[in-house]
Image 1: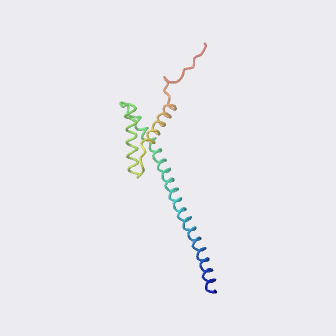
Image 2: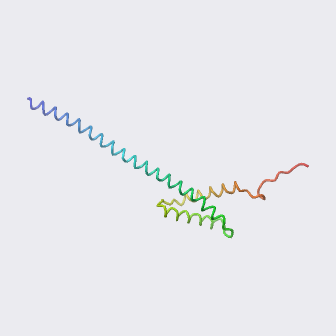
Image 3: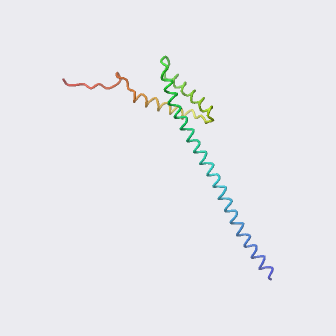
Length: 125
């Protein structure tokens, strides 16, 4: 009878330890996965920022080409951005780059309005 009590006591203790160990391991693995995801997202944000900074220069270079249309200038900026991404080990997202180029061109047109495109104020005198 004494052996039965000892066996039950040791079994319950071992079972409690096993449950605690499994819970710790599961939470530890989940924590590691969360950290990997966070690092991946941080790197993606840094890479996106690098591409955006470089795109400003590429669009400015393309605007200096006088004999080319908007499509050729945009293609030039996209090719330069793709080369930049390859050189820096960054994943290239063409749709994102397309949208950013459009934003930069739109901003440039709003900021740098030509004199002939500015609204003229008419005086009554």
